[in-house]
Length: 149
Ligand SMILES: CC(C)(COP(=O)(O)OP(=O)(O)OC[C@H]1O[C@@H](n2cnc3c(N)ncnc32)[C@H](O)[C@@H]1OP(=O)(O)O)[C@@H](O)C(=O)NCCC(=O)NCCS
Image 1 (cartoon, protein in one colour):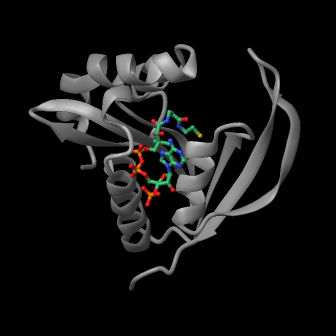
Image 2: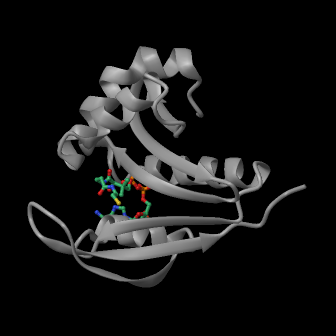
């Protein structure tokens, strides 16, 4: 579900902990920025037994969106939670006038590459040595959205 300000505040620590393991502390910074109103990103979350078990952070500018982060609790991966988040986000994009969604992903990240491919993202190019720790190329991907009026 798309988190409003109250829910984001309530689950901020859980979501930050979930993401920081994979994104080297970046998730906390994103969440902090949103809560402090320094950023206007949307945060979608999936819940299991009242715990946040997956999240996706989306940045939007005019009719374009970017998936900044998506992660699922390690012990619950490969159970469709990532797909659930993607499906919800695409529905939100369709209804909110987003024409195209972009993202970048480490080229060794096969689960994510497969997941994005399954949902219709196509590769647009490679950004050489974009990532640090370890240094790695980023694959740039995008997906067109059919806007619903
Ligand atoms: C990418 C991620 C969010 C997918 O979440 P998930 O809940 O495991 O995904 P789902 O169970 O819905 O799987 C959706 C598709 O992803 C692909 N996929 C997921 N895990 C995979 C794996 N271990 N190996 C290969 N493909 C995989 C498959 O195509 C799968 O579809 P299928 O089950 O019909 O084959 C999850 O692996 C994750 O949190 N990874 C760590 C964080 C990360 O790398 N995020 C992306 C950064 S850009």
